[in-house]
Length: 268
Image (cartoon, rainbow, N blue to C red; front, side):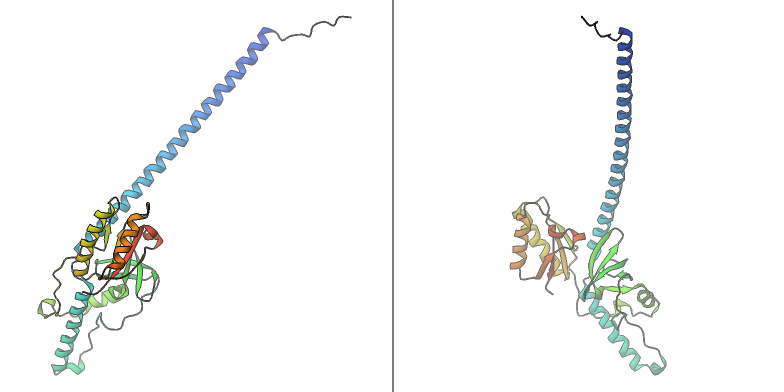
């Protein structure tokens, strides 16, 4: 017996199924396009926000460099002036008939309350305020705006001590005969050698270190980047052989890590 042929869909039904499939595909395409558009908008907004923050950080860095360049008096010179001021004050009080009834003048060179983590402090070399983020026995890491830098504890005052110093009577510096008169301007605490050849970088580093040494800076930060490591190694070999560099070390992680070397200078 011959079986009858199986029924086949009508042309109108096949066209309807095809039309539904095309409509579904078109709808999915529109949704994907909308999702991509939204994703691009989010990425663009995030990129714009990141660029804005980068520009703010760059402006703060430029302002910090301007302050560093303006700090022409070295820590040692300021210390000598303060010591001379204290000696002259003691001499005046000892010769005064009523000196026994006069309270001693607080001195920034006397005993100070130890700097603690979280203290709001005044950094005299930059004439600015910041917050202590970490401490060693001789140095503190101070947050100033978005930037962090290292400072010697001797260069820091708590805000309370700074206010007391402002309220205390002062002897004009113009009346002092300071044993040190530093006429060498500070080149700043940082030099950026990125993008330079080894020969160019070492030449600029040598000039910079000479200026920093004459200005009696206690330490400097050298930015050489990471890259292949050739410039970094050459810089550190140069520092190791230098008579005016007492030691050097990697920068802290928030300073650039292996891309930065911090060098401590001898006293001129």
